Length: 93
Ligand SMILES: [Zn+2]
Image (cartoon, rainbow, N blue to C red; front, side, top):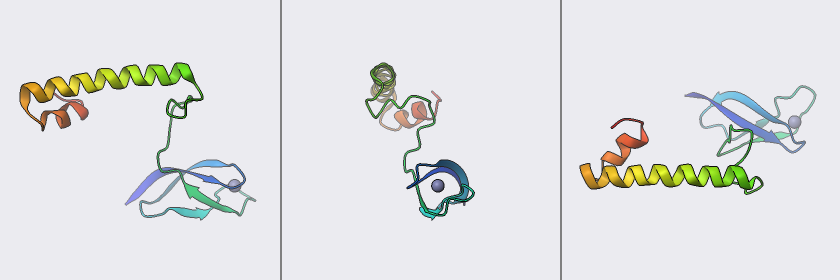
């Protein structure tokens, strides 16, 4: 399966590439840069990374959203049973 992933190389290039889903390392796609680039396992596509803790505002916002989402999932489980959380996670009810 071909998927779109982010890879980062030792020279600091982060590039979006289309590769086979099994690919974890490759030659850096940046022209002239021939070092090994590794797949970023959890690509973060927002401009501020809420997980790193470098941006307290983004982290707090992310946590607030996460809390809300977990509350919705918990409620769905109470009402409809354990599989309901999957429906909520997929955006359905
Ligand atoms: Zn590079």
